[in-house]
Length: 274
Image (cartoon, rainbow, N blue to C red; front, side):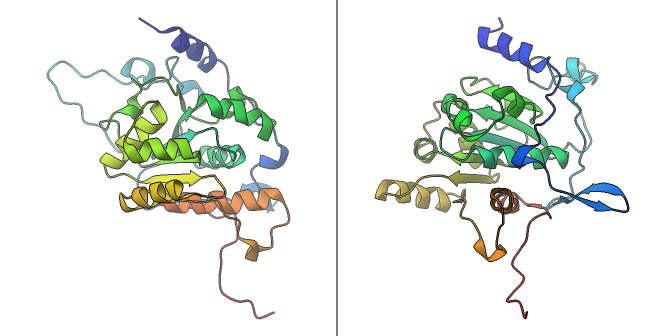
């Protein structure tokens, strides 16, 4: 039986994708030969075939099934063999400050044709209205598949669901603590726990200051367990001129931790001679 919250999500996912508001989070473009070309490029650490998932391929249930993807369902008792799957990342947003980082990350992943699975906590929904002009629906339209934090039956809650890594951006200290103890009381912390047990990449963009002993101990424990602890500290050697420059540089470094190389922000190349 379909849950009421699932019905509401189904109604949302049937809506056409919102055109992105341009604003300060717009993808940087450069002109070359009279044509606008994206500054962002990707090279996967593993040469996985990238495949574009169009808005029309979004499932009404937010899930990938044989019925709504057009694939032929396997016959009973027969193994189903498939070709290379698209590069796939799980993106989680918690209630800590830093929603613009998550939005920029989703924009770039969308333009790179990376399949994204997004889950937002209830406190993330409460915080975003103070940090961005985009609505919840507009943010969700950036992802290929959306889940609610209460949907513990979602595919990303299982290790059998294959993906290439997960990033929690921003990551609150509450979520950090839950991930450290394995207390998967919502889909975000459960998906992070599964990501670690399967030996996949997990990046936690922690947002808190100052830090106490408990925070630091949790970070050290998770780092030793294989997670990447990523405080979004600006790089001022690039001499950023706008907030967009700062966000882009941090997001580019986040993608580095997930094995994705992008261009579009300045990297350190040694001392200048000028």
